[in-house]
Picture: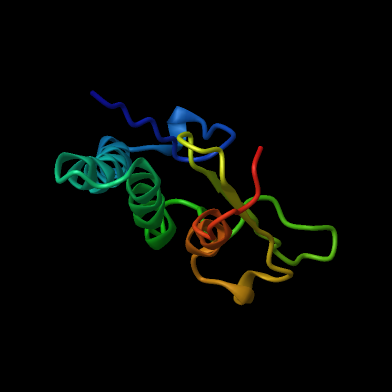
Length: 122
């Protein structure tokens, strides 16, 4: 048995800014992210890969700011970071590029150290 939980970002947009169609577009996009992870798990894939698959869908979707930043820095630039951890052995990876352009997918880069044998432990 497994469970996947995702969210579309921090903060809240007033419901008055959403038409029914726009809300459905967000809901469909979130469902696609869940489905990406679920499909991997159903085929016996690892939880680590399932999480990354779900996040990658969000990073590729212009409705969400995943992989593109959130609140702007005081100089107007965007700084991103990503972290991922394996619950099995507590290996973890973290990625903090200096600028938005350093990585199109921070979640992928964050996974790399977690896969190194003898990687950092929590």
